[in-house]
Amino acid sequence: MVYAHRRLTAAAKCLLVLPLLPLAAATASMPASAQDAPAAPSAAPAKKKKVDRNDAYSPPADQRTYLQPSGSPAAGNPGGGDMWSQPPPSSGGDSSSGHDRAGPNRDSRPAPQNGVVRGAILPGVEKDDLAPVMSEDGSGLPYELWGGMDVAALEKLISTIEIPPRSPVLHDLWKRLITSPSPGTSSANFAALRLEALYRSGLAREAAAEIAKQGGNDSPLLVTLQARNELASGHSDKACELVARSATLKGNIPARLKGQSILMAGYCSAIQDDKSSAGLAADLAREEGVETSPGLEALDALALNSKPHYSPVKQITLLDYRIAERVGGLPHKTVLEKGEPALLVSLASDHSTPADLGMPSTEAAARLNALTPEQLAGIYRVNAEQVPADELLAGRVPQGVGRRAALFRAAEDERTPMRKARLIRTFLDDAKHEGLGMIGAQMIAPTTAQLRPAPEIVWFAETGVEIGLASGQFNMARDWIAVADQGGGPGLGHWRALIDIADAKEPDRGRSFSALETYAANGRFPSAALYRLTTVLEALDYLVPIPLWDAANRTPQPTSGYLPETGVLTELQVASKKQEFGHTVLLVMKALGPNGAQDANLIALGDSIRALKRAGLEADARRLGLEALLPSWPRTETN
Image 1 (cartoon, one colour):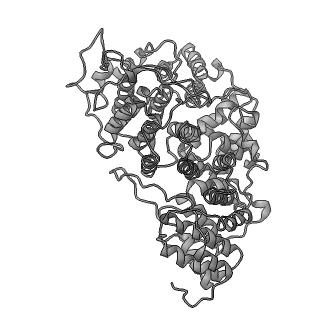
Image 2: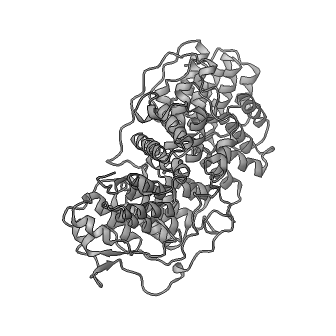
């Protein structure tokens, strides 16, 4: 579409000559693999429905009520402890097994010693075996984070990984990494890269805080990034004021980013109903190489006063959504399926979001780890209907996300132990069904902590153990195992092995595996789960019992799961040996692929755990092992 004869307004002329500043970078593309699923088809455009204000989705009136750090009363943890904080990483040396192949391997494993097999240990003490100097900022990370990487290398690597990571463990590690200051990385280019990574992760508030620390009034780059954050917070007028001011500042802008800046200016023209300038912005954006997007097509439609026809896209950005709002909006199903993290978080925080989009967007954002379990819990509390517990347990209305919110609130409010346990169990089952198992367990952990383990509710013990493990409350898990062991039933001894794996402070390391031998001998472990178990144990340098090896080797080793392109695992091994911490974390994210430890190939899983442990991040390595094992861990028949 060409607008050669359109009269230029003053604002449009400015677009041609004033400096243009970057917005969010395009979503990184992951390496193709056989496990990649095809993109979900776009839903047919739906007729825009006007939502009555009384029926609108309502995020918390005060954002602070659900954005406080975990452990605060408002975050749903009345006990006050920060259950998300991790113990300092162990200073253990390089305990890599040295295998290129994860899991049992009859041809290459070392000979048994006293009935067990141990991964090979490098002899002697080398420089790389020394413990890293840890930061005192509370991040649990080493002092020097980005050794071995310059800004160009960092930018290249970040462009190839999924951000934010779908793995809860890797997301927590990634967030700590990208928000932690590090000496020698104070350049403007590094600061811009960090801000871009924060925004892509759906952490616009954290990005805004970083900009405020740096003071960006005279920096065109920071002013534009600030405008983007204001847009993400729903402050369109403020965002456009900043866009206008950024055009008066001097600065060199990479050519590949100019198009995104033009789209922001086009959006500002659209909200002022300046159709001529909006259409011109669409033309200029195309000239700068901007690919077809809902925002670009919405600007075209606005200029011609016509109905937009949207082409299929991989992802919908926040800017796409806001521009499309001016011409009727996008189908909600498509937004939920393809919305970027920043968009989903913005919808979850905006009181004007329609009711049928607001609550589902919070869960979609949580699945991407763009919202924390505490934040999702706060939104549930504000929006939950008060439904009698008996009706919820009977499976009556509401359904969907409304049912989960009502179950969550009812479980928090219930005072009778038996009914409270049933509500918690029902909520967790529903959350698992919607792909929110780990998140749901972390959300409901403070409520579960209010239950005293007792024989009267021994049927709940396995659920209590699972919640304790997922939330890092290992004593809670131990207490429920103790109650089950006293109940005369099958017991839950095999769960002690998961506590052993996950708890970096476990005092009796490796003494809980006898129950695993019994489970394996009786065929209670599916072969795939058993191979994942031996892979994790070997990577953490455990003494793996021979019966587990033998049981695993009765079936072929699985070869499915995400495996990165050639060279990534070798690069990961080198980076971890050099204790290049940031480099190691990013390579682990790349090695495990878009779905994290649960769906990774055994080779990638073992090498990733081994690399984190070797780099001095043992607590994170153990949590990653738990994440890989928990979904497929054998449950008892009585549960």
